[in-house]
Length: 145
Image (cartoon, rainbow, N blue to C red):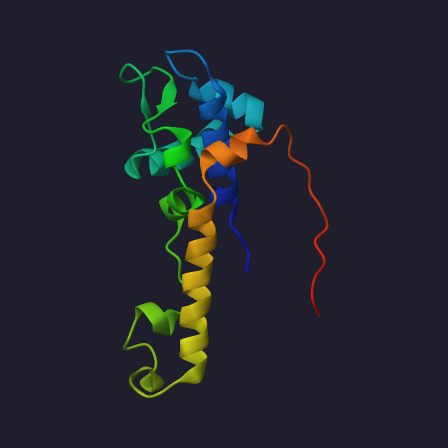
């Protein structure tokens, strides 16, 4: 499974917005500069975060952005689904996709369980927990083979 760039940049963007102590919010140009994201690409990211209700302009058009909720009330599921629906396999969400979806399909049952567990994992982590990390480092994870 691969997390797309919009989700990754969306998380970086919302972290940048959450870090500001300025009551006027953080300007888009500053987010772009600090996170090394082009202004044009950042437009679509901020738009998705606004549609999801996670960020808003602090004082109308042309002002900085701020969170609409406390960081503890924004989950990774909120951020992820601002950009993508969770679709592990098509047959879970689209009953007509596969002729086997009306039969007892063990594979479908597994993918449904996987989807539920993935959603649960995203729900467990909120923005406040992410912000409490003093720095981010990439760690190699042991892959079970």
